[in-house]
Image 1 (cartoon, rainbow, N blue to C red):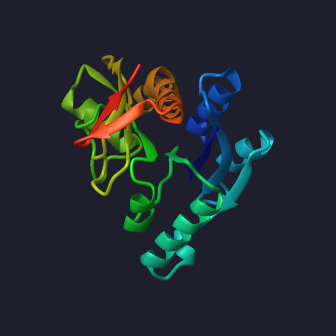
Image 2: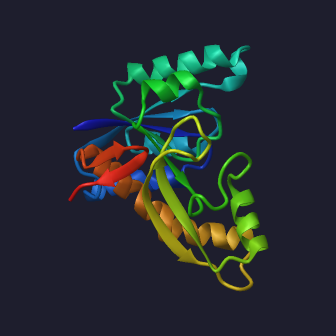
Length: 208
C-alpha cells in the first residue's frame, strides 16, 4: 500500500475527488495519509479532518529564503513516508530540492490539454480565459508528472471536454473539473500506486 501525500492551497475539490475515489475503490493500492496546505485557512484542511486524514501547514511567507522553504517542504513530505505526492490546487512553486527528491513521484492536474494553455501564468481561470479567447472547440485536463519545466513533465492521462458557445471561464472551469479533472487525477494516482507507469525518455508509458 503506497502512502499518498496531497498538497493543497484552497477549497480542495480535487482532494475530495481523491478521497471519494479511495473510498470507492477506484484508487487501488494507495492511501491518502497526509494533506499539506500552504494556507492555514484552506477548506481542504477541513475536508481532510472530516475524513480522518492527518494535516500539516507550511507557508512560503514564513521563510526568508526560498531555498529554506524548499528544504523544509522536502523534509516535511519525507517525514510522512510519502511514496507519491499529488498537487491538488497547490498554488506555491515547487523548488529543485523537492522535485529532485520525488522525481516522477509528483503528479499534478492541469486544466487544459498540454501543450495548449500551459506554462508560467496559466493557472486557474487564466487557463480557461485563454482557451475561450482563442476560440478552441475542445479543451480538457491533463494529469502529468512534475519536473522543473512548468507543466513540462511526462503526460500520464488526458481527457477532452467540449467547449460550448457562450461559455464563461467559470462555466468551462466547472465542466472541465466535473468531466475530466475529477476522473483522470484519481485514475493517474491509481495507476502509479499499482506500479503501472514507467517513464521512458520523458514519456509516461502505461502498462495494462
